[in-house]
Image (cartoon, rainbow, N blue to C red; front, side, top):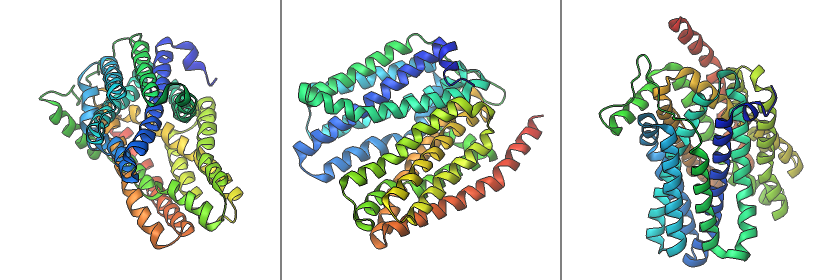
Amino acid sequence: MDAGSPLRRDPAFRSLFAARTISFLGDSLSLVALMLHVADTAGQALAVALLLLVGDLAPALLSPLAGAVSDRWDRRRVMIGCELVQAGLLAAIALSLPPLPLLLALVGVRAVAGHVFLPASRAAVATLVSPRDQAAANSALGLATNGGEAAGPLVAAALFPLVGVRGVLLVDAATFLLSALLLVRLPALPPSPSAGSEVPAGGLLRGARDGVAHLWREPALRIIGLGFCAVVAFNGIDDVALVVLSKDTFAAGDSASAALLAAVGIGLFAGYALLARWSAQASMLWLLVAGFAVSSVGNLLTGLAWAVAAAFVLQTVRGLGIAAMDVATNTLLPRLVPDAMLGRVFGNLYGAIGLSAGLSYVAGGLLLDATSAPVTLVVAGAGGTLATVAVAATLPRALRRRQFIGD
């Protein structure tokens, strides 16, 4: 399949693609600006850590509700509302630059709005794009999303000398307004009730509980969720471990450390580009398993690497695996989940993945302090590989059984 075919053929998907790209660029812009602002004004690493924690933890804890919102109301309106809320909050932060406690509260609310946007936009792909094009569409979105996140710090660096922190934050607010304008061009996207799954009634809490129950009750979804979370829980410490590996084990400088950290991003870009072209011919089941395996074995072998160059190659290949995990998951779920439940399943899954990453930072950091970077990477990779084997042994049977029951 031509990499650009969903983009060329579908104006609605083009609008969603552009909105997602601009939105993630804005996220990256504001993160850099706020980190530098807090570092300059608070002067404590703890304050920056709190900023990052609020931005990650609050949305993860509220992920069941975030998904329920996108299953209760028209997803187009939900996405537009989220972008407008983020634009307003960033404008308020830019104009007032409030003290740290209020700033953290505003950042937390903005992060929650962004987290509501994500399951709605992921579910929208399943409505806007035909099933045969969904893998390519998800690959294109992954490429654009990572491109926006990578470009954000560079754009921020260019803007800071010209407009300062306030100006960068106002530019970010403008990106969310532009994203909202692009989303206005989408058709209405109400969740579609189907057999056994109604649009949530009785309040968001009930809808959120139903979403968690559905994710756990369905064997195939449960295996995908537990497998993904296990792989992330083991391997999420890799960024910190790679810095220590470069500096302490290989005695390399800052440039080598930065290059090593960039390797996964290079692999991600390559992976999404390849999948956008060739994913239509791939089995999403085995693409998911391969992604888990490459992501985990890549860290295991990095722990055994003898030089920065070898670790760089391994981490680049590992980026291919992470891209495969993302595309396979985002393409498989719409095939397994009723549309009226899809936002909740996406929200719950990615919220759980975020919590798994937080667990990895804590447990992996303790292991890193107690041992060394090579040991930490080997343990992380070995644990993720065991989780991959468990998924490979159980998921095919669960999918066959589900298909048999459906027939």
